Length: 66
Image 1 (spheres, rainbow, N blue to C red):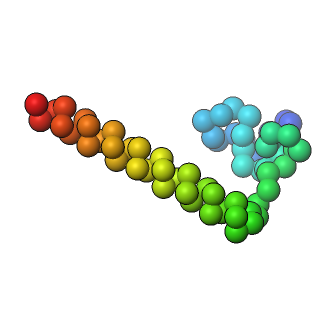
Image 2 (image 1 turned 30 degrees about the vertical axis):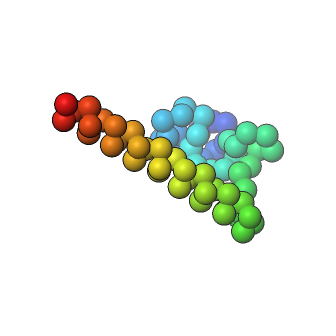
C-alpha cells in the first residue's frame, strides 16, 4: 500500500501515479467520463499526432534510403 493514498504501490513511470485517480492535478481526482465534444476533440488531436508521426517515419525512411 502507498503511504499517501492507501492504494497499491506506484507502478507507473511517474513516481506519484498509482492509478487510483487521487493523484490527478487540480481537484484530487481524475474525471472518468467525457462529453461527446471532449471525446471528439481528443480523437481529433490523436489523429493529428498520428499524422505527424507518419510524416516523421516517412522522412526517416527517405533519409535511410539515400
